[in-house]
Amino acid sequence: MVDFDERDLVRHAEQAGFPVVDLELRVSVTNTRQPVPWEIVLRSSGNPLIPPLGEALDRVLSPREITEFTAHFKPLVESGGGRRRRALAYLTAVKQ
Image 1 (cartoon, rainbow, N blue to C red):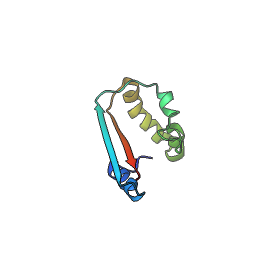
Image 2 (image 1 turned 30 degrees about the horizontal axis):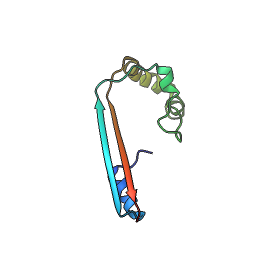
Image 3 (image 1 turned 90 degrees about the vertical axis):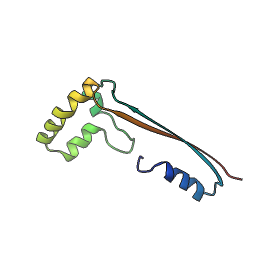
Image 4 (image 1 turned 30 degrees about the vertical axis):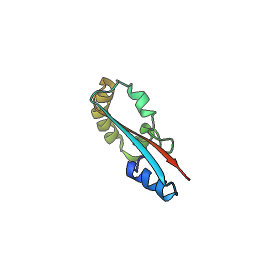
């Protein structure tokens, strides 16, 4: 659900026959994040069509690799480390 950008949105609207297209793009970057308990992160999914992180880890990593992954990321997630990037696109189109 994130394999597109604002140019793709405009192009799709134009190809759908909309002669008037307006897109407002909002981008925000925050250099700190809210701490999140690791158990919640493992049960979370960024998209309803993909498995939660814990399930994905179990599918693709060995137990040793899961331990290494957890040792690295759990302290970052639980301390609120990292950067949050968000992009929101508001597209309106008029078909005459």
